[in-house]
Image (cartoon, rainbow, N blue to C red; front, top):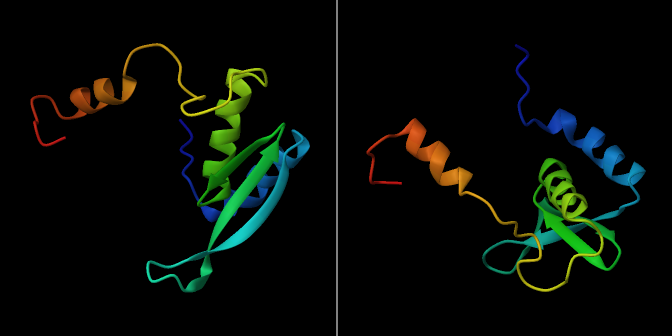
Amino acid sequence: MHQVESHPKMYNLCLRVLQRRGWTLHVERTADRYGRIDPVRVCWIATINEYELYAFNPIELLGLAEIYEHKGPNQPSGPYWWTVDGPNIWDQLIEQAFPGDDSS
C-alpha cells in the first residue's frame, strides 16, 4: 500500500487541477486575532458559477471544489448547500477508533 499525506509539496498540483477544472484562483492575506495583516497566513480562494470557496491551503480548497462538483452546478444556493443525506460517517469512524470513549 502506498501512503500519501497532506503536504505543501502537493499545493501546486491542487491549484493546477482546480485551474484545469475552470476555477478562477486568487489569494488574500488574512489578519491575525488583533486585526493586523499576517504576511505568512493567506486565504486561498476559488471562484466558479457565482460560488466562492475559501480555504487555508490548496488541498482544502480542492476538497471544497470536489464537494461543489459532486453536488453539481445547479444546487440551490444559500446556507448548507453542501449537505447530503446519509449516515454520519464521522461519528461511525470515531466510535470504531475509540469505542466507549465519551470524551469525543
